[in-house]
Image (cartoon, rainbow, N blue to C red; front, side, top):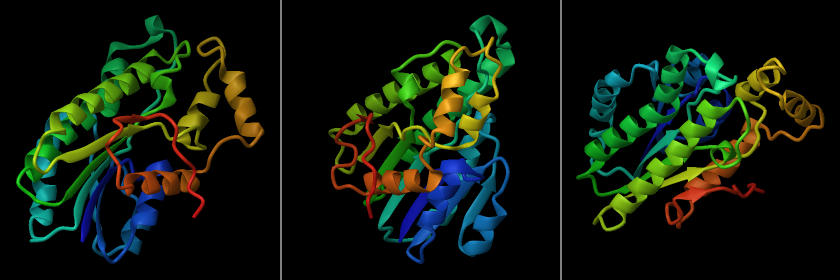
Length: 250
């Protein structure tokens, strides 16, 4: 049985990933602030944790509880962590951003994945199985726009962190494979949010509105297919940061 931990499963890519991973040979551990009752109703074995990732000091206890379930499987086929949860706001010139909003953004987008990776490593260190971490990053880490300094910085940090852990694991006897991936432009709540920002706060808002009107955004479902295809590749983790996700044709 594969044990798969996914953050941000209340909607968007996280929900789509969980929907596609519901399987008799998968045990899912879903984490989001608001529980997704649809997922809970579909999978009686699913473990759902209603958890606010801004409370990074509680992640250690969360993983202690989570791995109490996993350790009952004497021969897991694999243990995977998908760090998907993320926030976009604040979107504005940096002088307009409140200190509290900047800190909370970094807690969700960067600190939480770092702590979760640390806990994942700790709890799986002596488990001989296939271990993988997929961090959902963004092209915003590389291609910068005004008023998105928090988002671009958190995603660039996530990429650097992934590269560092990839180096740490390179010579381990039973390494954790880790990769950060840019999923593309997807029609999710983050896109809805960016289209609603005032032009004086984000001068490129019209371009994002046009992308949606022209039908150039991927659906969460097709993005989830491509991400899972990538996650299950034999060479997963060989490249620490993957900037171009290959569409999955089925």
